[in-house]
Each structure stands twice: as structure tokens, then as C-alpha cells.
Image (tube, rainbow over all chains, first blue to last red; front, top):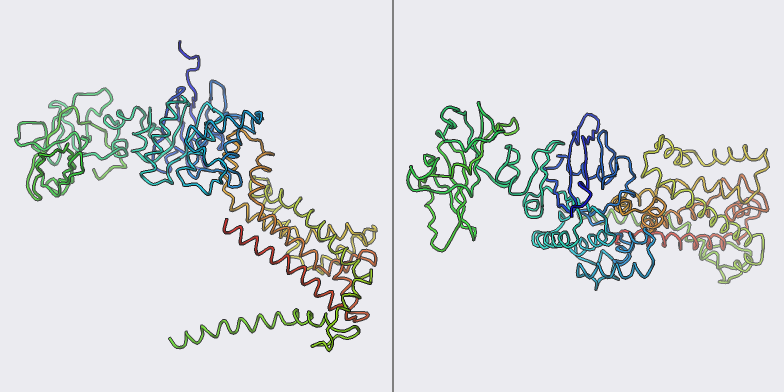
Length: 367
Length: 263
């Protein structure tokens, strides 16, 4: 049976301006029930503004917000039925862990006995029931963030908003917490909207990534869509590293004329630039070193090896084209790996359809 | 090098001389207060508690101490009840004209106290409001309110607004947020403000001198009159009592501020 609610959140033409600065510019976004959506982008891209508009902390200049099928554009924050996790945890320092988690239940005027069982249950769920009587300051950053998650989960809001929740934690702890949040999301089926500027975090956690740039949505989709099938240079550049070759499209030969040679284009897409200047994008892991000129397209691309390093499961070659342009090629490693010598000449190849033809962008002049 | 080493000893030296210069006049009354009756000399020739006995035997003296303490407590309550919500409103809302209101609250700091006292006397005299305890309480509250608002305002500026935001998102109403989230975290700031208010009222003489009569006079006013009309040695005992009360509260204030910084 299909659930009756189509969208947990739907924002339409949502705009927020500060003077002449458009923090959010006519954004449309829908989030399905139970979905884990990440708002990704550099600082100032509008991701936090969008989150604060959904929470009601900021008032929109124009546009509409619907939560759970109801118009919430002018609804006060405390009636939207949301939960939020902050980067700085925002646990009340004057309350014990138990009181912190019980706070939203006391707001809901729940009977004492039920508060007791609910708080104990949720603390057990995050494996922190032994610290119930301590003050937040006595806990580590990771523990505090888990308590702050528990404080959200305990009252079962339909949506949990997270504003860079792992930003203050070190790398190891951050990875543990990513798994913990994913586990809770899977177990409880709560809709989550997660803000981060960390692309690895976004790729690891999300059902869908919404990449933002200058107050607009640049591109959205599954992590693998954004990573392997970016539509713009900004997306390609923001997620992972990429090799970019700029040139002029030769539409009769379906090739790109660049300063480093002419390369055949991948199979045409409906939205790709048809003529004029364009950029060919190839991920480092889609490239490989080839022995002879004929074995792959682009094999004419000769490069000098600057360095070649083994990073455990893969090996990364840092190459330089004539004229100084840098290229990165990443290949799987193994016991029998042989690295090219520094200063030697190699040839780069790739599968035709692993390359992506992208329009030029005034913000990326130095491609 | 040798110059800077010499100046390293010179600076604390000057500081200590200055401290002593400032402190000696206050401290010298303490030994004097333990002298014999009818004399005010340093060092005292005999050591007795007679001056304190005289103080507590005379209802005009201890009555004005009670009056002063009573007024100081009321001033503390009034300024906290008015000042804490006022500081919160000015800090956390975009009140129209909020800046002007904030400036007005600080006004009494800028007006010379004697001008304020004269103004109050001229305004309240004709309508029969002088010589009333509550008038003194309100006048002192006016003087103490800026200090309460400054110390509570400072505590509020250090209070991360995300505590209030998270409470709001969790569904809490404004009243609950104020009492359960904001107020407990302002404890130290409120305590500091309360102590300021208490001490300002306890020591205040000019305004009280203008608007109190014999039935309502505070201890500093009684001391001032005593100096003018009789120069009783009891004054040394009174000064010591007042100093001890003020000092106790001031040390309490410093301790609270330190505790707040460490928390």
C-alpha cells in the first residue's frame, strides 16, 4: 500500500534576500517521507539559509513551504513539529543528560512515568544510558552529539534537520557518527535533511544530494549520479577531483580540439553543449596508463610522470602534460603493481563514455 | 635590560603605594572603632567594644541600619524583576526603538547624582512623596538598574542563541524558554547584578539625603548627619560595620564572577 503523503517537505520558489544579496534564489525542492537528503555546498551557497527557512528560524522573502502536506510558510517554529541537531550540540549546560533528553517530552506534557521509560529507551538505543545523570560538559564531543541526536529522536519528529552536526568532531569519530546516524535513519525511518560542506560525508550518507551554489540548486541526484554524471564544472569540481580538458567542439567529427590534441567525444546527451567551447571531464579513476597509442581513446595524450604514490588499495599517478597542465590518474593497486619512474613518459587512456562533456563556466576560467 | 628590570620592580612598587594610599583611610577606622567611649584617636589608648555597644543601644542607629538593609533588599528585588526581562528584550528582539530604550535605561549613569537628587526632591516634594521608604527604593532602583542591565546583558551576549533556537524547534513556548533555558544560564550574571544593586543602594547617600526624613533615613544619611552635628565616635563602629557588610558582598561578587568564568 502506498502512503498517502507524497512529500514530507515541499518548498516552492523559496527566496530569501538580505538587502541586495540573494541568500536563496527561488528554490524548488521536494523531500519524500523517510528520505535522507543532504544539502551540500560551499559557505554562502544558501544551504544553511534553506535549512533555517524550513525550521522557521528565518522568514522567507518570497515563496512557499509545505511540511507534511500543510502550508507552513508562516507557521511559528515551535509548531512545525521538527527536530534539529546543531554543530555545537546545543545541550543545556544546566541540565543533566536525562533532563536534556526529557525536555521535549516535558514540553509535550507527557506523564512522568512515560518520560522516564522513553528517555531510558532512547539512551539505551544510542548506548549512553550510563551517563544519564551527568552534565553534558562532562562528556566527549561525540557523546554530546549522540545525546543531542537522542533528544531529537525521543519525541519522534517527522523530520530531523541537521546543521553540520559532525563539523566539530575529529575524522575517526566523524566516520563512526556517520554510521550511527545512518543506522538510526534506517531503523526509525525519520526524514532527514542534512547540511554539510564535506563532499565525502555527503557521498557516504545521502539518498540524495542537493548541491547548492550562490543561492540556487546546481544539481541534485543520487551520490553516484552527481559524482560520475555531473552536469556542470562546478559539480565536477566540488565532488572529488577531476581532469579537465578544454577545447572547441568539432560536431562533424564528434571530437574536441584542445591544446593537447583532438579527443573523441562520448555518446551524445540531450543537454550537452552542441557547439563552441566545452570541457571534457574525466575522473582520475576512469583513466589508466596504457602502453600503446591504439589501445584507448585519448591514448595520444602523452604526459611526464611527476610522482606516483601507493595509497593502499589504489595507486595515484601525478602527471604533467606538455605546457605544464596537471593530470591525476588513479588505478587499483595490488601486490604486482609496478610504478612508472619519475620523469618517464607515459600515455593516458580512458573509456569513451566515462568522459563527460560539460559547458564552460565563467567561474572556471583556468581550466 | 637593566632599565627594564628596574622598572619591573618599580611598577608594582608604585601600585602598592597607591593601594595603601587608597586603603589606609578606610582601614584606619577599624582599630579606632575598638577604642574607648568618647574618644576618636589612632592608635586607641584602650581596646573595648563600647562603641559597638553604643551603636546597638541606640535605636536611631541600628534602626537606620535595618532601614538601609531593608531598602537595599527591596532595590535588589525591584531591579532584578525589571532589569532581567528588560535586558532580555533589548538583546534578543528587534524592538522598535530598542536602541533608544537601552540608552534611556543607561541614562541615570550619565546624570550627576546630585542633579538627580535635586530633581527628585523638587518633583516629589510638592506631591508629598518624600520621606517614604518606597520613594527611596524607587530612586535607588533607578540608579542601580543600569548596572543590573549591563551585567545581565553581558551574560546574555555570552549565551549562545542556539539553546533558545533548539528549544523553540523542540516545541517549547517563549515563557518556558525564558524560565527553563535562559534564566538558569544567566544565574551568575543575575547574581552579579543583584550584588551591584544591593551595594549601590546600601552606600548611596546623596539621593537618600534629599528625599528621606527622620523616620526613613538610611544609615549613610544618619552617618552624614552625625558627622555634621555631633561628631560621635560611634561613627567609627558604624563605618566598620558598613565596610564589613560591603566587603562581604563584594568578595561574594568576585567569587561568583570567577566561578562563572571557570564553568
